[in-house]
Length: 424
Image (cartoon, rainbow, N blue to C red):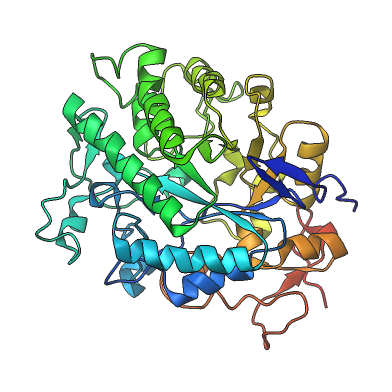
C-alpha cells in the first residue's frame, strides 16, 4: 500500500509539516481532578504522539466554567472518575505549557481546541472547588431555551441522563462570551500553542446557534442563515485579532439529509437544522473572509462510538463533505473514520490537504512512522477511551515495543478496513 501523498510535506499557517497525518482532537477525560489541568500523564501522552514536522490538535479544552461539562454521561466515567481540562486559570496554563514544551521538543506543532459546550454542560460544574465562590456564570446556556433530550443516536454519545433546560444567552452575555473566548485564546498563546482551534461542531454551543432546531432567536443572532452564522464569525474574528493571522483553525461537522432514508446523516446532541446545505455552505464560504490556518470538517463516519472495531461500519462509508473543497479556499483537514488507504485517496483526489486520525493515533503513538514503514498497527481498546488511568492512554507500545509487554492485539495495515485479523 503506497501512502506517498499522505506522507508528503505541506504547509499549515506559517509552519511546514513533513507529513499530513494529524492527531485529531479527542476527549480523554483524564485532567487533574483538583485543577482541571493537564497532568504528567497528559504531557507524556502528547509527547508520545509528537513527530518531527507533525501537527497535533489538543483534546477539547474549555474556555470557562460555563463552558465545561462533567462527563458523567459515560458509565465508566461515573464508575472510575474523569475530568475534562480547562484553560481559564494560571494553573491550567502552566500545565498546558508543559505539554507544548514536550511537543516542541519533538519538533512538532500543536493546536489548542477551544470549546464551549453550551446546553450540553450542566450545573454540576458549579460544585467544583475551583468554581465555588467565583461568581462565574454557570451552565447550561444556549442560543435559546430549547431542551436537550436524551436520545439513542450514536452522535449523542449514549446520553442517558435528564438535562437542565438551558437559559438563552442575552446580547450582553454574548459580549461576555466572546471575551471568554479571547481570554482562553490569550492563555493558549501564553502556554505556547502554535494555533488555536474553535470547536464549532458536534452539537456544542456554536452549532447550537447555527441550527434552527435549537436556535429560535429573533435578534441578529437568529432567524436567517447569515444571522445564525454570526456568532461563529464574531468569535473567529476575535480569535484572529487575539492570536494573529494564520494561527486560528475552525472545526465544523456539516450535516445533511440522506436521500436514501430521509434522515440526517450527522447530528450530535439533537443539533438539527431545517436547511443543512444552506447553513453550512454559508458558514464554510464565510470563513474565507478570515486568514485562517485551517478548517477541519468531520465526516459522518465518526459515529458508531460503541461499536466493536471488527464490526465498525465507518471504514466503508463514502465521503460526504467533498463539496466543501470548492467553497473553502484554504487548508482543509478531514476527520472521522479514516484509515490509511482512504486517507491517502482523499488527499490524492484533492478533497483534503491533511487527515486527522483519532482512534488509530491514540492506539499508535508513532502512527506516522508506522505508516511510513508499513508496521502493523495496535488495535484500539474502546473500553479505555474515556476515564482515569494510564490504560488506553500512555501504555500503547510504539512499533519497536520499547514498552513491554503489550496487552494489545495488532493488525496488518493492509487488513484495516477489510478485517481485524490479528497478526501473529
